[in-house]
Length: 225
Image (cartoon, rainbow, N blue to C red; front, side, top):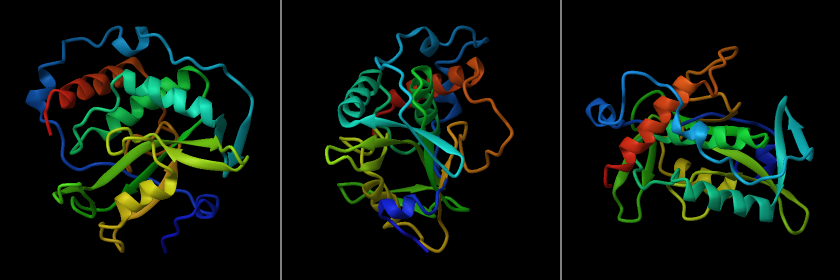
């Protein structure tokens, strides 16, 4: 059964991502024979002072960000171009690079996924009423302390939203048009790349993975919607 408020988030956690993919021919335009010194590793890290304000739920840790910190981080991530306009694929790459950026500055976070068994189980309707079909979609999720001192989950999905959405708004977009009896929503550790990822595999931020994902983001960014 689907539950949407934050209380549901605190009761049951979830997984998800995409369907179509930037073609290999597009990707190879950006790839070289070796994956040494990925650009992301040499870029300046986000501006964020590490802190110990954390929340643990079901063995998953979160840094509790102030609203000001959250808005600053979102702005910095957009400047790093992890919010490109290509929607049909690449969420696993963008989410993994964003996750790495958060990891670099000590922000504990996880990822949210919505997924089915087949392409089209997850569906998103664009403002122009066109429909994008996914098998899964994934994005990083962080916790933010609001002005009233409540703690709320936000999703760093920078492609589908002009402002990083509250958990409920993210769920609403990706769940309302999907085949509801075929999709699952989960929260997974930041190592997760797609619904097939399982512990104890830990290739979270290896240079090879970062290189591969960074170049996929460049490839999909060159494709106009």
